Amino acid sequence: GAVDFLYKPINSLIVKTRIDSHLTFSLQAEILRKMATIDGLTGVANRQRFDEQLELEWAQSGRDGESLSLLMIDVDFFKRYNDHYGHQAGDECLRRVGNALKQGGRRPYDFVARYGGEEFVVMLPKTDMHGAMHVANQVLEAIQALNIEHLASDVKPVVTASIGIATLHAASQNSPFILVSQADMALYQAKKT
Image (cartoon, rainbow, N blue to C red):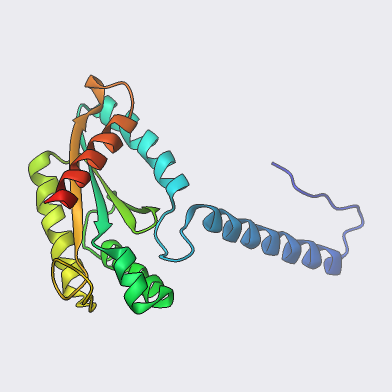
């Protein structure tokens, strides 16, 4: 575990300089780790971090025999929003939606990430379909409560979202990406209706 060494006789100025350098390197490494796993626009976990967490939660779910639920969330008519209000407003909209998802009062081990574009995911360990539907309703209410104007939407004059929900038991399936695929199909159905 050694990262440095000092020659004898010990010089206090050299010791202080080395300690300061190592603390700076440690802080920079932590910043880089965060930058590699956090979506720069929204401040939630990025897709890479989601994929890693999904593998971990899937394995844990299999060990515990618990269900794992996934919400796939898509901001309704977001292209129209960008076209009508501009890309800077679109970025701010995504920031606010991401923040609403983070601040949603969920359990500490629930996981929020930006999946891509205007899509987000919320992973809910140890949650059955009934619990996932309850959280999905909370998410819909939180996004609508942001009251972000969206006059180009066919749904409401404020930003809304559609959610696909999937719940599986890891022990009965081979791959966690089946969960993602099912949530994506459910999102597609939600968007159609």
